Amino acid sequence: MMRMSAPPVLALRGVSKRFGAVRALTDVELEVRAGEVVALVGDNGAGKSTLVKAIAGVHPIDDGTIEWDGRPVSVGSPHDARELGIATVYQDLALCDNLDVVGNLHLGRELRTRGVLDEVEMERRTLELLGTLSIRIPSVRVPVASLSGGQRQTVAIARSLLGEPRLVVLDEPTAALGVEQTAQVLDLVERLRERGLAVILVSHDMADVRAVADRVAVLRLGRNNGDFDVRHTSREDIVSAITGAAENAVTRRAARGAGPPAAPGPDPHETEEVTR
Image (tube, rainbow, N blue to C red; front, side, top):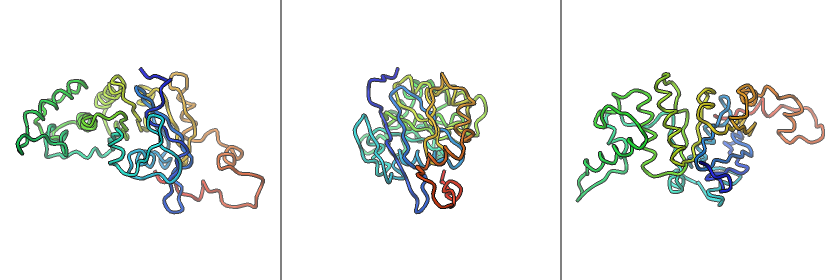
């Protein structure tokens, strides 16, 4: 259960990111609290991936502030993010197909006794973690290549929890999965919330979003375009924010801070390519 009186685990305040002349993110605001699932949605090119990588320290921000437990922090590298307690599971999973589940979970965090790998203890910890998350795997000693897409995704998420993070960022975790496999991953997202973790879920699938998210944050052309409580918002309202269906000339001028009429010129939203 999230405590609204406590400061957010993570808060972005006016975050912007540029790649040369291209503004990928502009004055983005985002909050996520313990025990809360926030879905980050938007069309292709909305800036979702850039924002995820900014949170993960892959693309340090150019302007704005990142707050952790209400305190400004610097996230200049993936190491900084991990030290804070941020775990990111990317869409490509980065699993080693030739290693078994135990080997993948402990990759880079191997346990040793007198200089020798402690396979018994690593297997025990693997079984314990998978058990607490209710993840069902035929055997933790089978190569990851033999697992289904949903099982591989759950293994990647479980691996991110070994460092005991407080925020888990999931980048399109149900992409290209079947119905049953998607259900397994969504069940796991709910269990992360039950454990009191803050979760950011990046997804294109509105059914998945509405099934597990508490709030939906919409990005459009690198800017905030709505923050919705899932329980009190229709699917149509969220889709309208994603597509910009409610946009007109007045709202677009306001979004870019236009003042008095100026000489005609190119619309930056039409000439500026926003990276995904």
